[in-house]
Length: 488
Image (cartoon, rainbow, N blue to C red):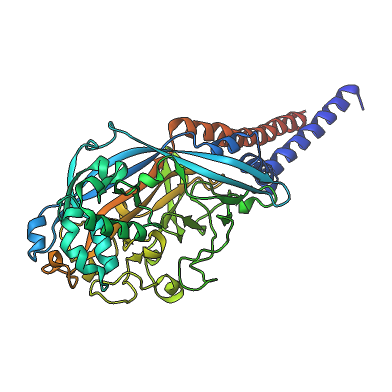
């Protein structure tokens, strides 16, 4: 064989080899394996990596939106009218998160940390200013009324409550700033006499575990979220995903415990700490995926289930939603039926579908629900006029990029309500209708910013496209060389 023939033969062999390699990479699991290993290395939590830095300090603020229910007919309600409310908002706060005191245990592949939250009002994104005046149910007053119901304290509270509460009444006209973060003050020492001071001291002893009320020598202060600002919600321990990528971000313990003592049954499903905090998810998800989410504000684990696919910024994502079955206290979730807050009729019964008793979590007689009482029991929901439930606006959801588990978009939504009804011995309540009164609802959400979308494109999609391009280029070159050999 001539030298030319040998060269042609060698090129033909090389072309065939390139074709085979390209074909194997492009049309077998080999390319998938390369991609999966690339994904795993980029998403697991390791010090001094981009993923770790993003996890430790959220590179963009979450939007914390608050909607209040302004009371339209407060005087009429006190005389027996059905409550009418109107939604006002959103009042938007930028919520920044910073993990602190991070410690890594290599043996267990776990990180321990606390997470500080800081809130700053965003006037540009808000519909109204923080100085907007709202008329709302006097939450601390009604909380006290429901707490002392049936006790001898009712007599003294009935006589003195208006002076203790600055003569502000059963409904408060208050600024959004005071209601949400700055605080509403009552039992102000300089404004009350000795007898009232003794009663207020008794109230201070009652609220030692309250998240929404604090006290000092001069006053008691109520705010919905003042306790959250520039603070953390406990010590977490989570998996780094280095030994098993599917455990990435899974909560191993909270406050050095793996069980709560909030709900019925010491080792019940309701009390078992598990899931994740909704900020980090493992890779390799599909339309059958579901995730338990641990929410410390609610002391509760809820489940997000895949509900089809959607697109965000031209990236296909899996849509996961929180369903109606997450606000029940029946069947396997009966351990959520604590019977600590009396129901609409003043009885200790399990709450109907759509409501959760938060007293054992917040030390306050609050009922949580989805916003506008979405999917809630109609008898309860229809006790107030002005709510307009809409699943698209009021359901909790998250959109994940399926391969990397990157959250693209999401919103956690919850509403806080209080039962109002006649309470024996409290004159101001004697004409009230039995109602579940909505006060506020909140949305903690995000849309992945353009910069982060571009980083996802660069870190993941560009590399996939490069690998695909290489495989197809090998096929093309191999086919071309083989074609030249055959033609000769």
